[in-house]
Length: 455
Image (cartoon, rainbow, N blue to C red; front, side, top):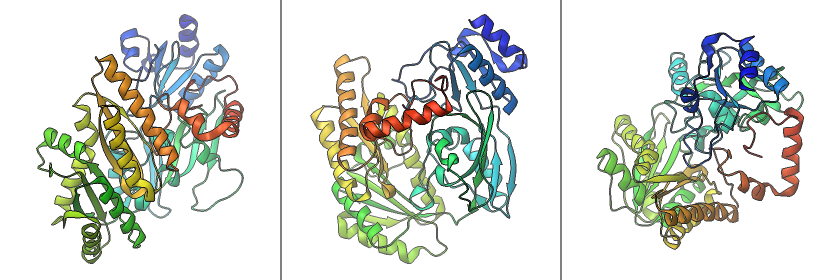
């Protein structure tokens, strides 16, 4: 089959985009979700054009071969993991920024464009593409679209789905579908654009995106508050939002995470804190509002609250927050949860996670986009100890159950992938599952697009 597959692909693709060496192909087998299973790809295609993608899908349909689309493989749910005998369709070489329009405030890009590179290009026009995942320096726009990625500034500026105006998508049979438009408004027909955002490559392969941009705001100034309990930090978050403030970011790290970041970076964050809350404003004159936020934090129980002196100091604190995941990963193997709950239930979730860590005798560090209730409890354990692995998985499941019980969701921005597929059915219910399967069947009747993921 591999010989026939290679020959068929070679008919419409240049030799330099085909990777058939088994060892090199194996290096494309998985994303960053280390404990998710991954199969062995038959080969890898490093597509450079939409026509390359179309040819791959036509061959895959004819030969009934599964296709796994990939970006930079920074995902955390196994959504880009290979299945045995598949074509891995890498889109990282489709990395052109086709246009930036400062009048219409849109950018047209290919899926392999790195998020940070788009930010640099739009900055030249006084514009910004707001969604900023923690991996923004390496993750691609296509991957962001596939998972419906969020980021640190979503509390004010929203998530990826709110910035994708239109898409070019290659369907399972190789046909090209164009969705959406370049205009800010438009309600003609079903919103197919939103359907593909967050679909993790299970309905089609995105080959071009039209993205909304915003004027670049001033650099954020950050207030830092330290709490002796996560409960108090949750109260502060609720009161800040209830008071009508609109932070550009509101991030939280628990004590386990703070200590891990200190050990990795020597940043000198307060080791004694149970929760560190970072609240940023990017308004032209933020001093008075930040002072009010400081007061709210103090009234909620912060034993220290202060505002960074300038944008440079603020950026240092935000860099500490971006180091949370790599810092915790240095402590052992990690299972990264992604539950989101209503902001009003954030304190309950944080307390619940602490109780789960104690019950299962497992280290769990929590970092969170506190402003939108999206938390990342990170279960850290020794993968060489079978008992520790069992406890870690049990803790992971308990956190997802807790999130649902608090009126939340199993994933706020990382996607379902392989990691949470079984839990998706629990969240959706039987009617929701049937609807999802119907949509999948309509776009991918042979089931060849990223099989085994999401649904």
